[in-house]
Length: 189
Image (cartoon, rainbow, N blue to C red; front, side, top):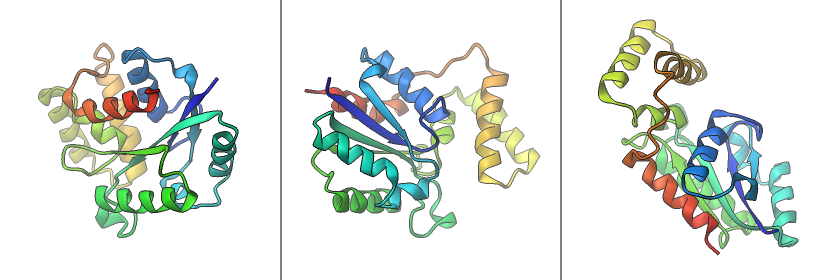
């Protein structure tokens, strides 16, 4: 069976990244069983052409087990990383590594961010919740003075899940449309 592959941050087990991706895939009527998830760990691993996941992916493509690939990477912030941070830098550098790996024909990119093209998965999720909920979370984060990005991401996700346990992701929100479009294209014959 020919599968598709999604490379994302974190690990290939249940993470926030692949949890959201699986929800969207199911919402679109596709089967997550047809997806091989590659957890790349940190964002910097996407830019290492000798990463073990790239060797496995290339082997799967050569064996015609994988037909299409989607790279899902956080934009992060340009001021935190002048080379790989921000939407434009992430896109440019990721296209370069995909080209160097010879995966351009079968690959697509989705850079996870908010409507200002900054941030990460949690920023995208925050951009899809009602304004009053978003305001509460942003106020808490300001008051708490958390400075670490990793703490901020974990706290943001935990606050949302704790404060609004009956409010699942609004998968119909227009901010999810570009990612859903990439997923639809991934599954096209």
